[in-house]
Length: 95
Picture 1 (cartoon, rainbow, N blue to C red):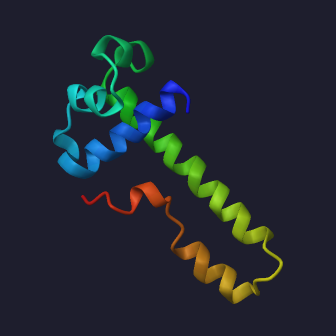
Picture 2 (cartoon, rainbow, N blue to C red):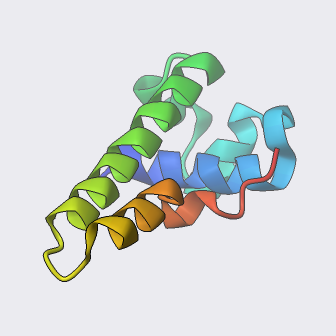
């Protein structure tokens, strides 16, 4: 797993535990890296949140594509599945 993805996964976990109160320290600890390394990848918490959003939507688009290309599903079933598309890692994140 590349460093950026490792950090994003740690941020998802920290966000699930602490919500918007998460700190860059929390993310660095979760990724088992130094804060200096974290700040070399993301300028600040806002930059990290934008990257999380991009990461989230990229995963959603991949799931949507897989559903749409699944020839074993009829149109109604595809619609049902598309409505609830959500990356697995984000299901435990509560706001």
